[in-house]
Length: 113
Length: 112
Figure 1 (cartoon, chains in turn brown, blue):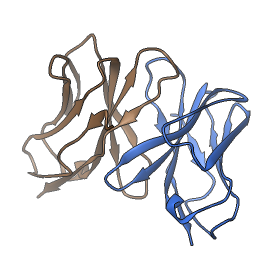
Figure 2 (spheres, helix red, strand yellow):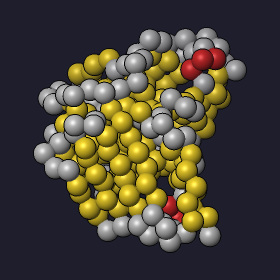
Figure 3 (cartoon, one colour):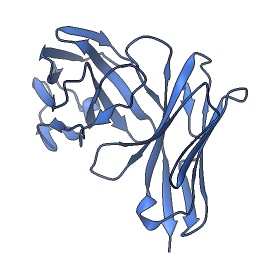
């Protein structure tokens, strides 16, 4: 049972345009959501997070939106740059416990010059 | 910045061998985690530890065990390696609460 789903395995965007990566979840107990970026042969790097008490969080070119009623979150990257080409994972954790993360399958983003 | 170091980047072992993967963190974080990453499946949690000598099973613990004798070190053990354990293994550390986990660079393990 996949509690966190990224339905697009890949996405191709032109440099300078907006990249939008999507993520859906099923567990209503999730209250903390994160996005990680992963280059080949490296570990995932934390990008941005959002708590369930918010619906938007911004950090420079990166904005995460949370729609709790739809159980959907998205990551917007504006403007997209070649260095943004990587695999992006969304992750979620539930209230309490040791903050176990449940990850989506990942979306490979390619930024074309 | 948190530094999470995994002892090997690449490892090749034979079926039936006992395999040890080591992970060390330098920030005195409470929680440590072991994941495996497989294409199309994302990262799946094998085991985690929230204190020295404390451990809990994750989603796919079968065939694995862990050891945390010191706060900074978390070891993953494959008791008798099998070919379906060929994967990328990732270790992470976290201070606790709603804080991000910080990952090492991973160990690509091949079981022949």
